[in-house]
Length: 181
Image (cartoon, rainbow, N blue to C red; front, side, top):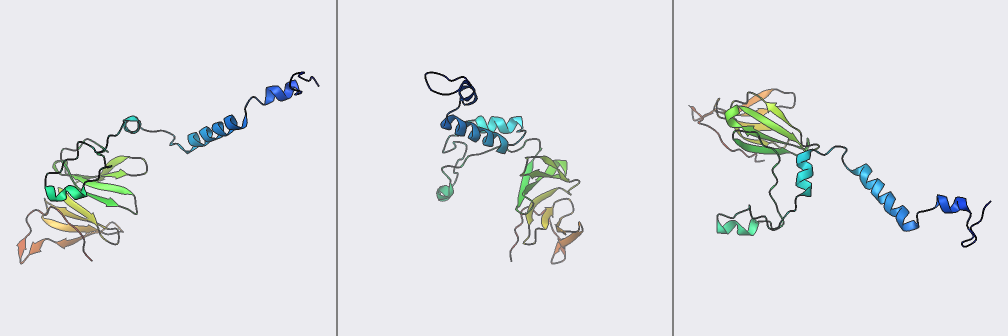
């Protein structure tokens, strides 16, 4: 075995251990971070992640003074998707971790999966659905302009009409909806 006269270490030990403890731990942390990072971030998400956020976000404007107390100083606006002619009536499904909203002129509802940001057509035609919500059992409830009714979609895929008349007269064009116990 060849010994290095200055340190008393063999040539094999010197070549095999170029890392000190701190370097070794740093490489381990780097490898762990790479393993936990998503495999493929979309270009838009990378751009958003790299963009410097400024707080408070100047794009958040209070139009009515009495709502000033609800403005979050550390909140920012993030564009999740573009491509609708007129997007409105969004509803969040916490169990499925997805967002549903309407593109009214295109007569469709869209869904964005929280897991990977994928957006797809959820329902088409949607009867020009506008307002949507989920009830306490996770069923989608929607106001449909075209059919002038409020409908609920059951877990088995069936649709139930909840309202289409009031005092014998047809509804006009329902807009927003909320479920109350």
